[in-house]
Length: 193
Image 1 (cartoon, one colour):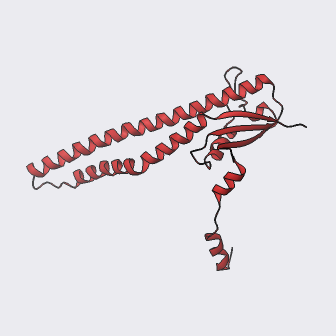
Image 2 (cartoon, one colour; image 1 turned 180 degrees about the horizontal axis):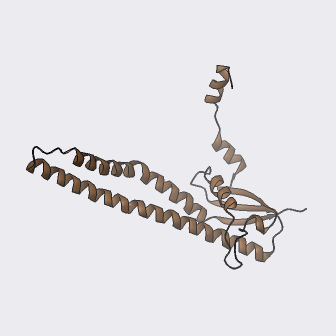
């Protein structure tokens, strides 16, 4: 599409200045505000919800999670809903539903992390057992090919190393991200029509 290599180079070295943009657009007095416009409660609460057991619209949840992803983790988050004039009952429903759904998302994240931890423990056991089997097989069966046990040992060991140096840090960041959203407060900004 672009035949001019200087354009490609310009695009390659283009900087986003994300921190400065966040400071001017999103962060105010040490708090990150996620701006959201809603014309009515149906923009926020799922149409499939039952009264008394409401849940957030999936598009709304995706918007919040995607927006908060850019905010540095040291800032608390406030969901700022503007647009419609909500009744006090609607405000309570929205606030309670945001809190409940974010708690569910945090719980799902915690469960996923716990499953990965259990797998990590299984990988440690597998590494130790395959190492012991490899050691015994080496001593007792000198002419037997041991490649299968080597592959098994390194498969387990690779998973352990990946968990310790990559996945564990990612899980921590994800937990912080979801914990911050579960701690998020909701504010309503009413606009005159």
